[in-house]
Amino acid sequence: MPDQPAAVLHEHFAHQFESLDHQKEVSLLGMWVFLVTEILFFGGLFLTYTVYRHMYPSAFAAASHELIVWAGTLNTAVLITSSLTMALAVAAAQAGQRRALMAFLAVTMALGCVFLGVKAFEYYTEYVERHIPGHGFQFEAEYAQPAQIFFSLYFMMTGLHALHMIIGLGVMAVMFWLSWRGTITSEYSSPIEISGLYWHFVDIVWIFLFPLLYLVGRHVH
Amino acid sequence: MSTEHASSKRAYYTVFLVLLVCTYVTWQIAYFDLGPLNTLAALAIAVFKATLVVLFFMHARSSPRLTWIVIAAGLFWLGILLVLTLSDYLTRLWT
Figure 1 (cartoon, chains in turn purple, red):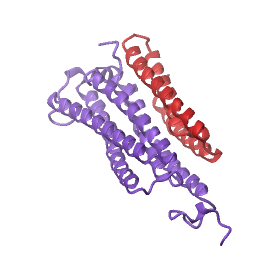
Figure 2 (cartoon, chains in turn green, purple; figure 1 turned 45 degrees about the vertical axis):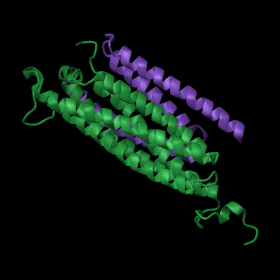
Figure 3 (cartoon, one colour; figure 1 turned 180 degrees about the horizontal axis):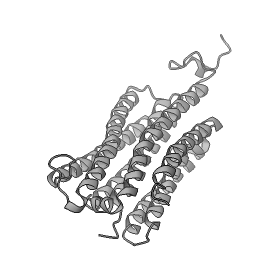
């Protein structure tokens, strides 16, 4: 086929597509569809949270007050910064700047690790303060039962979010390797763009988790 | 192409700063007693921040219509999940 444009003969071009652009469009759309399933996945937890918070508003305020608010705020800033470096990594990939791409991916991964480190420190603090739901759980007697519900939701929601962060770090490690190998070019940057969509989604989940978990009834206590 | 990239990078930095300011406002506003408005304000700011991330960082702004349909469908189903369930749970004590 002598008339095929050069891009069509790219080594990562799959023959069922009309062009590399078409291929990229389809793979990005696939990621969006996956993210929609993720919205509903997390949506169920946010729904459960709302139902129980509506049932036990003062217990949720008291339990939320036990969380380390500076750690939550710091982590929000860390994730937002990592989203910026991820967006810049995508821009570098599209522009074919391999070194900048690798640098931005590395910074994104480093910030992801900072987030998980702060999270680990928080979990450890809750463990020391006996806020892990179960037999050892301790809280003001008045709120002991519903506070366990709050902390169950806290650990489930932030735990699921942290799992997404860990998967994201794995994805970014693969992206770093692909960039280092030179697989990622300005023509073929869709792997970075797709991973970026995932990373930003995980950031968005945290944007909602932060006020709902850390800031309930701060003005009361 | 290069000017387009430069302008989108400027947008990234602007969005980043707005997101940081919003985080600070969310944090500070929680210490004022606004009654039920506390939660409402926190959620409104969170929705605003999420919208900025989707539009700019995730390039929804320049994505094909089909992507918009997928996003809208996702939000619509999330709406069904939340509205139908909460219309039961939040009204059980009404007389």
